[in-house]
Length: 299
Image (cartoon, rainbow, N blue to C red; front, side):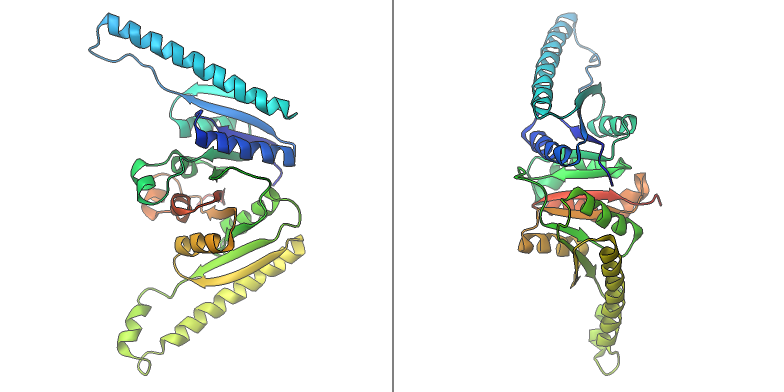
Protein backbone atom coordinates (compact mmCIF):
# COMPACT_ATOMS: atom_id res chain seq x y z
CA UNK A 1 0.00 0.00 0.00
CA UNK A 2 1.53 3.30 -1.13
CA UNK A 3 0.30 6.34 0.77
CA UNK A 4 -0.26 9.37 -1.45
CA UNK A 5 -3.10 11.17 0.37
CA UNK A 6 -3.90 11.09 4.10
CA UNK A 7 -7.19 12.43 5.47
CA UNK A 8 -7.00 13.79 9.03
CA UNK A 9 -10.11 14.41 11.11
CA UNK A 10 -9.61 17.79 12.77
CA UNK A 11 -12.12 18.91 15.41
CA UNK A 12 -9.50 21.22 17.00
CA UNK A 13 -9.31 19.02 20.11
CA UNK A 14 -6.23 17.58 21.80
CA UNK A 15 -7.14 14.16 20.40
CA UNK A 16 -7.25 15.40 16.82
CA UNK A 17 -3.90 17.16 17.29
CA UNK A 18 -2.42 13.78 18.27
CA UNK A 19 -3.87 12.36 15.04
CA UNK A 20 -2.34 15.25 13.10
CA UNK A 21 1.10 14.60 14.62
CA UNK A 22 0.88 10.97 13.50
CA UNK A 23 -0.34 11.98 10.03
CA UNK A 24 2.64 14.34 9.66
CA UNK A 25 5.04 11.54 10.61
CA UNK A 26 3.45 9.20 8.06
CA UNK A 27 3.34 11.88 5.36
CA UNK A 28 7.05 12.56 5.82
CA UNK A 29 7.78 8.83 5.70
CA UNK A 30 5.76 8.28 2.52
CA UNK A 31 5.95 11.76 0.95
CA UNK A 32 2.16 11.94 1.02
CA UNK A 33 -0.24 14.87 0.99
CA UNK A 34 -2.27 15.73 4.10
CA UNK A 35 -5.87 16.91 3.90
CA UNK A 36 -7.26 18.41 7.10
CA UNK A 37 -10.99 17.74 7.31
CA UNK A 38 -13.20 19.74 9.66
CA UNK A 39 -16.92 19.04 10.13
CA UNK A 40 -18.87 22.21 10.90
CA UNK A 41 -21.93 22.16 13.13
CA UNK A 42 -25.27 22.64 11.37
CA UNK A 43 -26.59 26.08 12.34
CA UNK A 44 -30.11 25.56 10.98
CA UNK A 45 -32.70 27.95 12.50
CA UNK A 46 -34.28 26.79 15.74
CA UNK A 47 -38.07 26.77 15.89
CA UNK A 48 -40.03 28.95 18.32
CA UNK A 49 -37.17 31.40 18.96
CA UNK A 50 -37.72 35.17 18.67
CA UNK A 51 -35.77 37.34 16.23
CA UNK A 52 -33.51 38.84 18.87
CA UNK A 53 -32.40 35.40 20.04
CA UNK A 54 -31.82 34.31 16.44
CA UNK A 55 -29.63 37.36 15.93
CA UNK A 56 -27.56 36.57 18.99
CA UNK A 57 -27.19 32.95 17.92
CA UNK A 58 -26.08 34.09 14.49
CA UNK A 59 -23.42 36.34 15.99
CA UNK A 60 -22.10 33.51 18.14
CA UNK A 61 -22.06 31.16 15.16
CA UNK A 62 -20.16 33.69 13.05
CA UNK A 63 -17.60 34.17 15.81
CA UNK A 64 -17.12 30.41 16.10
CA UNK A 65 -16.60 30.10 12.34
CA UNK A 66 -13.92 32.79 12.44
CA UNK A 67 -12.10 31.08 15.31
CA UNK A 68 -12.34 27.69 13.59
CA UNK A 69 -10.87 29.17 10.39
CA UNK A 70 -8.02 30.72 12.37
CA UNK A 71 -7.23 27.44 14.14
CA UNK A 72 -7.36 25.44 10.90
CA UNK A 73 -5.07 27.95 9.18
CA UNK A 74 -2.60 27.63 12.05
CA UNK A 75 -2.48 23.84 11.73
CA UNK A 76 -2.20 24.07 7.94
CA UNK A 77 0.78 26.39 8.35
CA UNK A 78 2.44 23.93 10.73
CA UNK A 79 2.17 21.16 8.14
CA UNK A 80 3.47 23.33 5.29
CA UNK A 81 6.47 24.46 7.35
CA UNK A 82 7.53 20.80 7.42
CA UNK A 83 7.73 20.91 3.62
CA UNK A 84 4.59 18.84 3.12
CA UNK A 85 1.76 19.45 0.69
CA UNK A 86 -1.48 20.14 2.57
CA UNK A 87 -5.05 21.30 2.12
CA UNK A 88 -8.16 21.98 4.22
CA UNK A 89 -11.75 20.83 3.73
CA UNK A 90 -14.41 22.32 6.00
CA UNK A 91 -18.01 21.21 5.47
CA UNK A 92 -21.29 21.14 7.38
CA UNK A 93 -22.40 17.67 8.43
CA UNK A 94 -21.82 14.73 10.78
CA UNK A 95 -18.06 14.22 11.26
CA UNK A 96 -17.96 10.61 10.06
CA UNK A 97 -19.91 11.38 6.88
CA UNK A 98 -17.78 14.45 6.14
CA UNK A 99 -14.58 12.43 6.58
CA UNK A 100 -15.76 9.56 4.39
CA UNK A 101 -16.88 11.95 1.64
CA UNK A 102 -13.56 13.79 1.73
CA UNK A 103 -11.64 10.52 1.49
CA UNK A 104 -13.66 9.55 -1.57
CA UNK A 105 -13.25 12.99 -3.19
CA UNK A 106 -9.48 12.95 -2.76
CA UNK A 107 -8.97 9.21 -3.41
CA UNK A 108 -7.22 8.91 -0.04
CA UNK A 109 -5.71 5.63 1.15
CA UNK A 110 -5.89 6.39 4.86
CA UNK A 111 -8.10 8.26 7.33
CA UNK A 112 -6.42 9.30 10.58
CA UNK A 113 -8.57 10.21 13.59
CA UNK A 114 -7.96 10.79 17.28
CA UNK A 115 -9.78 9.74 20.41
CA UNK A 116 -10.51 11.51 23.66
CA UNK A 117 -8.29 9.20 25.63
CA UNK A 118 -11.01 7.27 27.44
CA UNK A 119 -11.11 3.49 27.63
CA UNK A 120 -13.49 0.94 29.11
CA UNK A 121 -17.05 1.66 30.19
CA UNK A 122 -16.80 5.47 30.11
CA UNK A 123 -15.75 5.33 26.47
CA UNK A 124 -18.58 2.99 25.56
CA UNK A 125 -21.14 5.23 27.22
CA UNK A 126 -20.04 8.43 25.45
CA UNK A 127 -19.90 6.72 22.08
CA UNK A 128 -17.11 7.27 19.59
CA UNK A 129 -16.82 9.18 16.33
CA UNK A 130 -13.88 6.91 15.53
CA UNK A 131 -16.17 3.90 15.80
CA UNK A 132 -18.66 5.51 13.45
CA UNK A 133 -15.91 6.19 10.92
CA UNK A 134 -14.69 2.59 10.83
CA UNK A 135 -18.27 1.34 10.45
CA UNK A 136 -18.85 3.21 7.20
CA UNK A 137 -15.36 3.69 5.77
CA UNK A 138 -14.14 1.70 2.77
CA UNK A 139 -10.50 2.75 3.27
CA UNK A 140 -8.10 2.09 6.13
CA UNK A 141 -8.68 4.02 9.36
CA UNK A 142 -5.95 4.78 11.88
CA UNK A 143 -7.33 5.57 15.34
CA UNK A 144 -4.57 7.31 17.28
CA UNK A 145 -3.92 7.18 20.98
CA UNK A 146 -0.78 8.61 22.60
CA UNK A 147 1.53 11.28 21.19
CA UNK A 148 3.80 9.74 18.53
CA UNK A 149 7.54 9.80 19.12
CA UNK A 150 8.51 8.41 15.73
CA UNK A 151 7.54 5.69 13.24
CA UNK A 152 5.80 2.55 14.44
CA UNK A 153 8.42 0.06 15.64
CA UNK A 154 6.40 -2.67 17.41
CA UNK A 155 3.29 -3.52 15.38
CA UNK A 156 0.91 -6.30 16.38
CA UNK A 157 -1.43 -7.78 13.75
CA UNK A 158 -4.56 -9.79 14.54
CA UNK A 159 -4.91 -12.67 12.09
CA UNK A 160 -7.97 -14.91 11.77
CA UNK A 161 -6.71 -16.42 8.48
CA UNK A 162 -9.21 -14.36 6.47
CA UNK A 163 -8.46 -12.27 3.35
CA UNK A 164 -9.06 -9.11 5.39
CA UNK A 165 -6.42 -10.15 7.93
CA UNK A 166 -3.94 -10.92 5.15
CA UNK A 167 -4.48 -7.42 3.76
CA UNK A 168 -4.07 -5.99 7.27
CA UNK A 169 -0.65 -7.64 7.53
CA UNK A 170 0.45 -6.23 4.18
CA UNK A 171 -0.79 -2.73 4.99
CA UNK A 172 0.89 -2.81 8.38
CA UNK A 173 4.21 -3.66 6.75
CA UNK A 174 3.73 -0.74 4.34
CA UNK A 175 2.86 1.66 7.16
CA UNK A 176 6.03 0.84 9.12
CA UNK A 177 9.65 1.45 8.12
CA UNK A 178 11.19 -1.32 5.97
CA UNK A 179 12.29 -4.48 7.79
CA UNK A 180 10.25 -3.64 10.92
CA UNK A 181 9.57 -6.91 12.80
CA UNK A 182 5.85 -7.70 12.91
CA UNK A 183 4.18 -9.78 15.60
CA UNK A 184 1.12 -11.72 14.39
CA UNK A 185 -1.39 -13.13 16.87
CA UNK A 186 -4.15 -15.64 16.22
CA UNK A 187 -6.76 -16.01 18.95
CA UNK A 188 -8.09 -19.54 18.91
CA UNK A 189 -11.07 -20.88 20.82
CA UNK A 190 -12.63 -24.31 21.29
CA UNK A 191 -15.81 -24.96 19.28
CA UNK A 192 -19.07 -23.88 20.87
CA UNK A 193 -20.31 -26.52 23.27
CA UNK A 194 -16.88 -27.95 24.05
CA UNK A 195 -17.20 -26.68 27.60
CA UNK A 196 -19.88 -29.31 28.17
CA UNK A 197 -17.37 -32.09 27.46
CA UNK A 198 -15.80 -31.59 30.87
CA UNK A 199 -19.13 -32.55 32.45
CA UNK A 200 -19.04 -35.90 30.64
CA UNK A 201 -15.47 -36.63 31.66
CA UNK A 202 -12.38 -37.52 29.65
CA UNK A 203 -13.39 -41.16 29.27
CA UNK A 204 -16.71 -40.37 27.56
CA UNK A 205 -15.56 -37.32 25.59
CA UNK A 206 -11.82 -36.72 25.01
CA UNK A 207 -12.02 -32.91 24.78
CA UNK A 208 -8.21 -32.62 24.59
CA UNK A 209 -8.47 -34.33 21.19
CA UNK A 210 -10.69 -31.48 19.99
CA UNK A 211 -8.24 -28.96 21.41
CA UNK A 212 -5.29 -30.60 19.67
CA UNK A 213 -7.18 -30.60 16.37
CA UNK A 214 -8.00 -26.89 16.67
CA UNK A 215 -4.42 -25.96 17.52
CA UNK A 216 -3.02 -28.19 14.78
CA UNK A 217 -5.27 -26.54 12.18
CA UNK A 218 -4.27 -23.08 13.39
CA UNK A 219 -0.58 -23.98 13.26
CA UNK A 220 -0.93 -25.15 9.66
CA UNK A 221 -2.48 -21.81 8.74
CA UNK A 222 0.23 -19.95 10.69
CA UNK A 223 2.92 -21.77 8.69
CA UNK A 224 1.31 -20.50 5.48
CA UNK A 225 1.42 -16.93 6.83
CA UNK A 226 5.12 -17.29 7.61
CA UNK A 227 5.86 -18.66 4.14
CA UNK A 228 4.00 -15.79 2.44
CA UNK A 229 5.67 -13.21 4.70
CA UNK A 230 9.11 -14.61 3.98
CA UNK A 231 8.43 -14.49 0.25
CA UNK A 232 7.36 -10.83 0.60
CA UNK A 233 10.47 -9.97 2.59
CA UNK A 234 8.69 -9.31 5.91
CA UNK A 235 10.12 -10.22 9.30
CA UNK A 236 7.10 -11.91 10.90
CA UNK A 237 6.57 -13.99 14.03
CA UNK A 238 3.26 -15.78 14.62
CA UNK A 239 1.88 -16.71 18.04
CA UNK A 240 -1.23 -18.78 18.76
CA UNK A 241 -3.07 -17.76 21.93
CA UNK A 242 -6.30 -19.11 23.41
CA UNK A 243 -9.03 -16.60 24.20
CA UNK A 244 -11.42 -14.09 22.69
CA UNK A 245 -9.81 -11.91 19.99
CA UNK A 246 -10.16 -8.59 21.81
CA UNK A 247 -8.85 -9.95 25.12
CA UNK A 248 -5.93 -11.66 23.41
CA UNK A 249 -5.05 -8.56 21.37
CA UNK A 250 -5.19 -5.99 24.13
CA UNK A 251 -3.37 -8.24 26.58
CA UNK A 252 -0.62 -9.11 24.09
CA UNK A 253 -0.22 -5.46 23.09
CA UNK A 254 0.17 -4.38 26.71
CA UNK A 255 2.60 -7.15 27.65
CA UNK A 256 4.67 -6.66 24.52
CA UNK A 257 4.72 -2.88 24.65
CA UNK A 258 3.33 -2.62 21.12
CA UNK A 259 2.67 0.81 19.63
CA UNK A 260 0.23 -0.36 16.94
CA UNK A 261 -2.52 -2.98 16.69
CA UNK A 262 -3.83 -3.82 13.23
CA UNK A 263 -7.12 -5.62 12.63
CA UNK A 264 -8.94 -6.52 9.45
CA UNK A 265 -12.61 -5.64 8.96
CA UNK A 266 -14.65 -7.99 6.82
CA UNK A 267 -16.55 -5.49 4.75
CA UNK A 268 -19.93 -5.68 6.46
CA UNK A 269 -21.83 -2.40 6.44
CA UNK A 270 -24.87 -0.89 8.08
CA UNK A 271 -27.25 -2.84 10.30
CA UNK A 272 -25.75 -6.24 9.50
CA UNK A 273 -22.35 -5.05 10.75
CA UNK A 274 -23.89 -3.64 13.92
CA UNK A 275 -25.68 -6.92 14.63
CA UNK A 276 -22.56 -8.98 14.02
CA UNK A 277 -20.46 -6.84 16.32
CA UNK A 278 -16.85 -6.07 15.54
CA UNK A 279 -13.49 -7.04 16.97
CA UNK A 280 -12.16 -3.80 15.48
CA UNK A 281 -14.65 -1.66 17.38
CA UNK A 282 -14.06 -3.50 20.65
CA UNK A 283 -10.30 -3.23 20.23
CA UNK A 284 -10.51 0.52 19.65
CA UNK A 285 -12.47 0.93 22.87
CA UNK A 286 -10.05 -1.06 25.02
CA UNK A 287 -6.59 -0.82 23.45
CA UNK A 288 -4.02 1.47 25.06
CA UNK A 289 -2.22 2.13 21.77
CA UNK A 290 -3.04 3.21 18.22
CA UNK A 291 -5.27 0.87 16.17
CA UNK A 292 -5.27 0.40 12.39
CA UNK A 293 -8.50 -0.94 10.91
CA UNK A 294 -7.95 -2.37 7.44
CA UNK A 295 -10.97 -3.02 5.25
CA UNK A 296 -10.93 -6.22 3.29
CA UNK A 297 -13.09 -7.29 0.34
CA UNK A 298 -16.73 -6.26 0.60
CA UNK A 299 -18.97 -9.00 1.97
